[in-house]
Length: 268
Image (cartoon, rainbow, N blue to C red):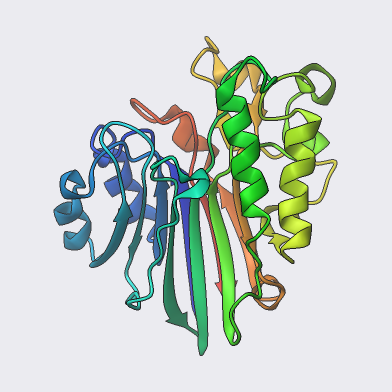
């Protein structure tokens, strides 16, 4: 059976609900994972999503900041998990379990801290928080549950590879591409037996971006992007991957997020 999983940092779901509805109507993923929803659970706009057939919704929100939500056309088992990474009370993780193609799959939805502007934890606590968060993610393993496959998606706020940014040399001291961050994220991936699905069929040196700054006057002309959004899986699902779509056009929609949707298509 075909299965499609999408991830998108929406940067305020209530503000950009028309874009979410347009995306769901046009691309119709089976599951959409949103990050930075910026609302409490009771404020999440579930009704229009249910009208579109996405009747299964799990949220981990908080007032005004952060927050993740997973909306699905497929039933979600009563096995959802919301982890408080670093124990600071932020809503940055949600996992759900669903069945597809004879497999049981746990889907993790992450919003990793951005880390501020200065890549030095001694003067910038936000950067220290980010590094601690990534360290804690190293405990997550793709084969942690017997008989359960795994997918990890989200805005991980790190572009790990040289060709995940517009200029490797110029961004080495910029938060999201510093060596301590990129090495940390690669350690999460390799230590947890995760497969980077976006690079499975599109290896370097081809550039891949999912984020373009609001600060650019003409983001299309400059094209100074970074691959901050990711889709990983356990090895058994990686072998079933058909393709990954990055919807660059969404960056040009009216009142867009600075991130664009990414969709992984499987044949299970």
